Image 1: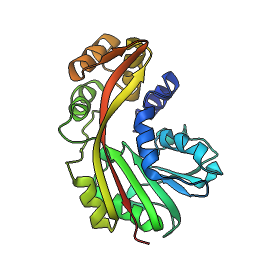
Image 2 (image 1 turned 180 degrees about the horizontal axis):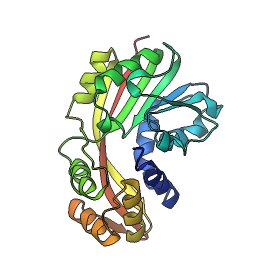
Image 3 (image 1 turned 90 degrees about the vertical axis):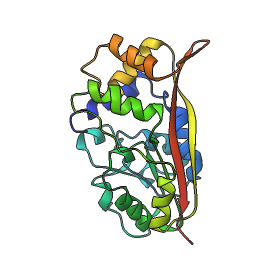
Length: 244
């Protein structure tokens, strides 16, 4: 991430709302209120935090925890920012109302430790919502296939098995746990924009745009709709509550 964080962050400048549906599904499951204190982990360049900003009374109530300094460079200074491992969140017990995690868990070796930390920092009645790639899906094959081949660092994601998020949440102490695999689209205004965005987001610097386009069309059934290019994507979304 230190090596390709800048490329990842540049994708947001190409098309900030490409993944808007992906983010909105998670935010809706978090049930945020204006006075909530929210932990976004891993925060990356702030994509989830930026979507939460309009929902809270003060952006400082959004606590971004990101292990990579390179990724964190794009975070808005208005947020509360910590560079720290997810297995040891630098937050006090019961200090957070909501924890959200979007598409970062597949790079985490000890997912159970992070789920326990999410439980620890949440207030009683607090909510943890996490979304990540499901093993065996087209997304998983694309990330550990073409993305792995075309990045300088490789991509060897450890993806979630069906039911794994629920099991991790229950083991950490969460109740009223639910899990669903959700399919949707990343949206673009042209094929060229889609290719440029994905090449930057995933750091596919060892491939030209023609090769990236070929990899995308081989992996996904891309749809054309009026002035939009729709790239099928999916994540498994899980939600759990800390007992009140």
